[in-house]
Length: 198
Image 1: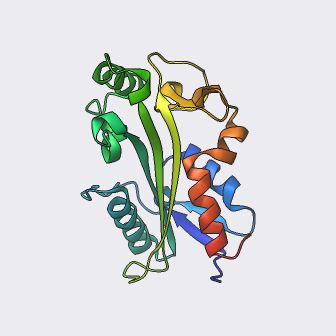
Image 2: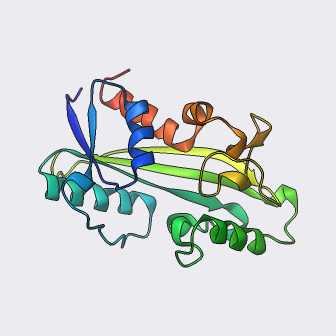
């Protein structure tokens, strides 16, 4: 068991900070990398794992504290795992609506049975910038891509992601319900076990 009272989250996203802090619990304080720097590292990795480690090392180097990074996205079976690590910038950085429109167009004539997809989350925790043994935890959330958006909650591809176990889209789940079953929740459960918080 490792004992951390503080971790720096390698993200400037206030929503992600709040979500992960709620999942982590009160015994560990999660601080934003934004307290230390406004610069985002270039994500040059070719996988979720590589990018998560790269971001965690960068945050640890800047802050001098143990660091946690999350790299996540959507992998669509029919598209060979795309948009994958490029999920957030799938439509050249034009935002969620453009990303969703591009995905719907890419799957225009694809039948329901071939629209399988999964949200992927990799969490990487490093004790220091040169940690040779990062803790890696992966969460997968399986579903399929709808033919049109549905629901008002969430962000990103949530309105297009059908959750079979709940018979609704991810964007139709309440935030608290999503936080129990999402890819990020699954990865965080594993991390909490590794840290002895469960």
